Amino acid sequence: MEMIKTVVELLFVLLILTGALLSAVSSVGLIRLPDVYLRSHAAAKSATLGVLCILSGAFLYFAFFLDFISAKLLLGIVFVFMTSPLSAHLTGRAAYRTGVPLWNRRIQDDLKAALEKEQIKSDSSSS
Image (cartoon, rainbow, N blue to C red; front, side, top):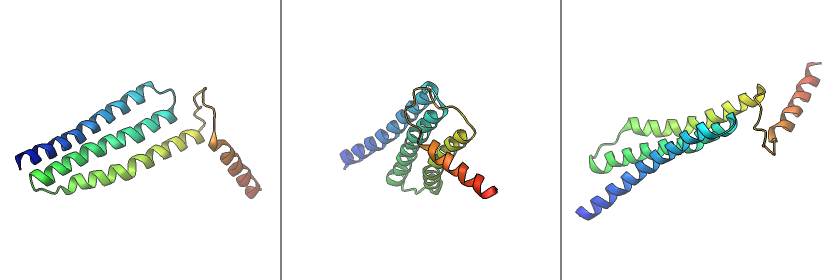
């Protein structure tokens, strides 16, 4: 029984360490990536997954070893899961709409045609 407890504890530690590593990778991405869109992507993907791994590891540790279900950790997991990707998406969209330039090596601009189409539509409806 002690062996199983140790293995489960190691799994939770691994989950927390994975989350810390992903958060570190995210911070490197925020420093090294060239434009706001790629930085936003790094923050949204790896930081969100990193924080979720850390919070999940802590929640599972408290639940299995201390018999304590933390509502605060559950709310933190749900809140981060829902808000971080959404805020990164809206930040990128706002940056694009205000004219923040794309990285000069970017090959594709998927939003340009949609934005021009929306502009034509709004111009025709206002006249």
